[in-house]
Length: 145
Image 1 (tube, helix red, strand yellow):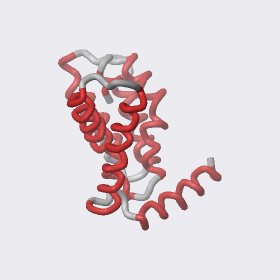
Image 2 (tube, helix red, strand yellow):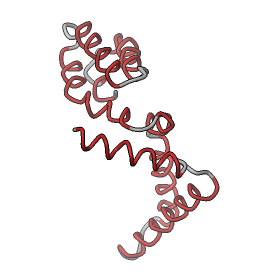
Image 3 (cartoon, one colour):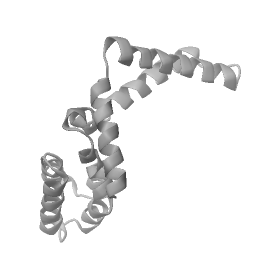
Image 4 (cartoon, one colour):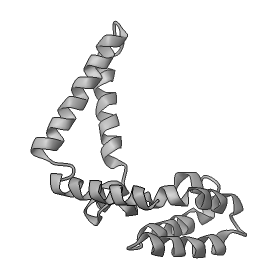
C-alpha cells in the first residue's frame, strides 16, 4: 500500500487507501482480483503510476489467500515482524558498539531464541494444527501452480 500511495497526490490518498483495503477485505482471492480490476479501471486515469504498481504487485499482495483463514489475521499485518525488529533495535542500542561481529550475532540470536520460546510456550503465534493445515494447503497450491 505504501508503494502505491507514494504515487498518489495528497488529497487522494485516503480514497485510494480505502480502495486498496476494499481489495484485501474480499473473502477469496478471485473476488479480490475482480475488485482490483474495478479499482484499477476507476483510478487508472487519475493515478496511472500507482495503478501500474498495484497491477504489477497484485499477485504478491494476494498470496496470503493461499493460507487457511485462521492465518489471515496474522498474515494481514506486518506487526509481529515490526515488533520483533523493534525489540532487536532496543536490545542492540543498549550495547551501543559491539566489540566484534560474533558478539552482535550472539545477542541477536538470543533475542530470536527468546521470541521463539515465547511464541511456542506462552503466546503461540500460530497453532500447530493451523500450521499443518497451511503446509497441506501450500503443498496443494505449489502443485496446482
